[in-house]
Image 1: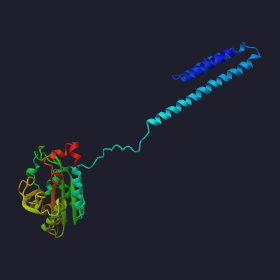
Image 2 (image 1 turned 45 degrees about the vertical axis):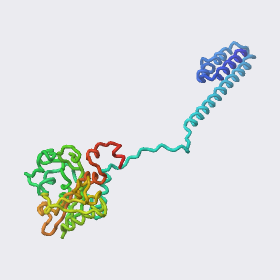
Image 3 (image 1 turned 30 degrees about the vertical axis):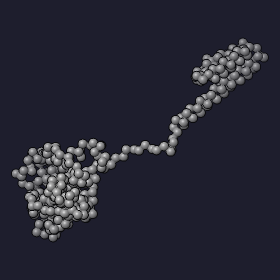
Image 4 (image 1 turned 180 degrees about the horizontal axis):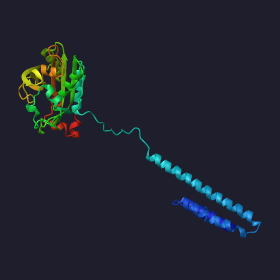
Amino acid sequence: MKEKLQKIKEEATAAINDVNADLEQIRIKYLGKKGELTSVLRGMGQLSAEERPIVGQIANEVRAYIEEQLASLVEKQKAAATAKKLAAEKIDVTVPGTASSVGKLHPLTKIQREMENIFLNMGFTIAEGPEVEYDYYNFQALNIPENHPARDTQDTFYISDNVLLRSQTSPVQVRTMEKQAPPIRVISPGRVYRSDAVDATHSPLFHQLEGLVVDKGITMGDLKGTLALFAQTMFGSETKIRFRPHHFPFTEPSAEVDVSCFVCGGKGCRLCKGEGWIEILGAGMVHPEVLRNCNIDPDEYSGFAFGMGIERIAMLSYKIDDMRMLYENDIRFLSQF
């Protein structure tokens, strides 16, 4: 039996030193409940009383030896695995890093914020309102009668006879005048909707920024000074503006407002189509009937209003000749801004 124990020790040592050794299988083979060492110990009953302590001591030594060898090899394997992992995860801090792709503001958002900041610096505040609007706020309160062409279903997205997608941000001005007594000085940027076919200069969804001032003694001169300051801040200090007579139901008198071409300085170029002027917005003095609709006495108060397309300002500022490019989300285009 001593010889058998010695043979088990030698075989276990050879198995453990095998580079492809499965340590768990070795443990089971030699130390498990049905292992070879256990099998030897079960036969100790056949030994004499004198031999049992000697064989038992040798068996315990073999068991301890095999367990120690297995534990030692396990630690070596763990250390090797850790070293391999550390080598694989080693970072060379001298190697240039990989730049992350960072997003930026959409050109429309950039222009809108720039426009908002110009008016905020003039003392305006920002007012917001619903995009799904009542006919009253979008048309009736703005002195637009039922037979007006703007009410045509070919021009306006009607949800029902009384509910529509706002075609302008002017309803925000009406809601502001209903809730706030003069003095009023607000701008109302936001999305608007009109039933236009998509082309280089039209879209069924676009963005407007409108402004409203109501107070005692407001004149056309105040309107012109406000818009001149906006144009000079937006397009350059040498920019001039001009008013051309026009008609809007909610303002009287009304005007289309042009700015001198900031590319050619008014001499005529491709951007201004040789005219030297570029139309950017509509404006006028708030119609007395609109003030009455909002419970403001037109004999005591007056005001001016204006509105412009944010897409148009963006296209002029960035020299974009097709509005659709602003909506296509082509990263090659957007990354230029």
